[in-house]
Length: 255
Image 1 (spheres, rainbow, N blue to C red):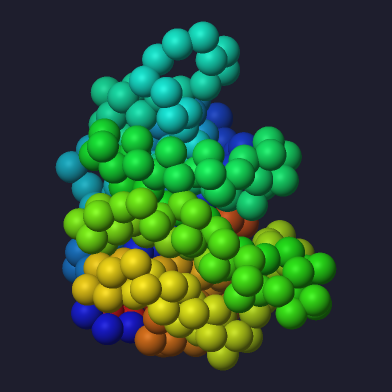
Image 2 (tube, rainbow, N blue to C red):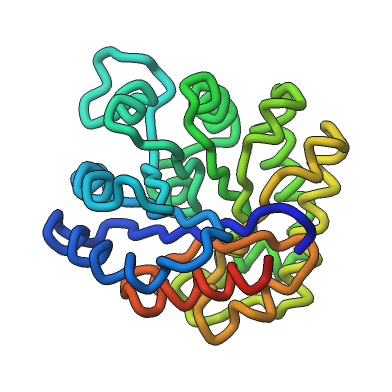
């Protein structure tokens, strides 16, 4: 995995009430109380961010939001700004998840603005990229990744680029039970790193690249052993504290 710090992020999506979020954190903390090796991130819904922040304060858990608007404020009903997130001690934000792209028509150009605003507000962007099953079957994976990475990140300085986390999520493997083989996942993540290197080679070596296609305790070891996979953006397996703790342990072991 290199000397990049492993990054284990749980994306709860639209799950958990405030009570359930606190119960999860209280169940998780004793299981990850050992060495602070991996960076542990919980990407919670807006309504439970405060619950997770309050119940995990002073621990190794970093709290992330699942989206944000690029504007500082204004007439954007239902949206939340980067400044609002920082005001409650959120430290990272998921941007461009495939579900946001599909259901809310988020574009790479819009994500470029969000990434920059997140960085300007001291929020760590977790930029999601990846191909659909149709694009994969058509042999378009690299072209899709190239377009997504270049559009969203080419305008950043080297310092800014090094602060971005990239999550590769093969859309055909999300919530389907399918998983890319370790070799296929590594191939895609290595290609992403080459795209980052074309922007700035030094920064590319610092960027954590996550695998986001149904990582679970059963397959984490093999995925995390790949040289260009630095962690996971985990959906279903992050909803149970015991499963997520096993993934944190896998990240710790891979360091």
